[in-house]
Amino acid sequence: MSSEKELRITLIGAGTIGLSFAALHLTHLPAPSQLTIFDNRPNAEEYIRSNLPKFFQNSSIPSSISDIKVATSLQEAVSNANIIQESGPENLDIKKELWAEVENHAKKDALFWSSTSGIPASQQAQNMQDRTRLLVVHPYNPPHIMPLLELVPSPDTSLEVIQRTQDFWRARNRVPIHIRRETTGFVANRLAFALLREAVHLVDTGVVSVEELDAIVESSMGPRWAVAGPFKSYHAGGGPLGLEGFFKNIGGTVQACWDDAGTPKVGDGWEGEVFKQAREVYGTVDVAERDRITRRLLDVLDEEKGRKRSVDEEK
Image (cartoon, rainbow, N blue to C red; front, side, top):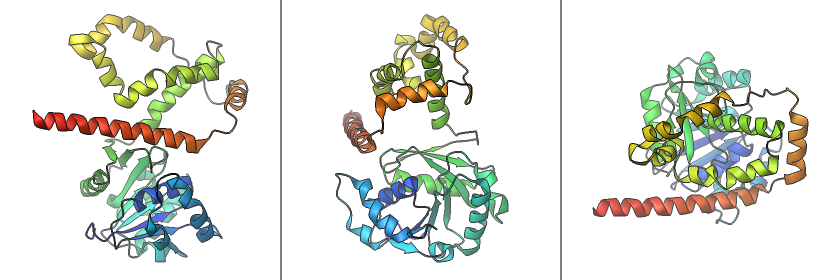
């Protein structure tokens, strides 16, 4: 990769995730760098120019937004890029063809990143000559706000690619976590969907309503887990013995909950009532409000973590 002072980043796909990544890159792009976007919709340039500013909301829109290049061909988009990041359709055949073509036109040392939600790099790279180059960089939506990026290599992905990618994102105050083995849905979604499955079970069996369940999460583990994840939280809850003490104290209750966990499947028939309640309670969710509150919460967490680092350094 060329110097951090002059980066050429190409984004393939200008959907919600692609534009969110564009907003993120623009706020960290050193001059005189270049951000290029390629999207195959007929009105790509008009669409990008109209919709990208919305991702900045109350924050100031960087002047570099006017310098974005909207490429008209894939070859033009990738030929000089240091980083090529795709956020295209969740379709394996499309991604396999895309990366094979990208490889034909890209520089030999360019980083290849896919922001797929679930298609492993090992499958996407099947038509590539050099499969060591491709790495999944899975964001937690929306990536211009949420810090997490799951780096999910295939068995062929080189350690150098993983390290260069981690270095890039850490320099931008993101949290790039190296997921050591390809697994369905990666990690963040597996955790979130496990909670969603139990939430569906509790609503479907009449224990609580959709609105009540959300209120429980928002007023308990939601804010708790923003400060400390499940292991750290329950380690703190176990007293002097930590996590071991926690399981010693209430391990029986934990096991009873695990044994009684719901196992609803998509298509089992619960959807009608759950979807109906969600529509009645929430209608169309104000995503801008969600993002604004999330950003404020993350700012507070950053401030507190910075304060802790300062105290630790003084000791």
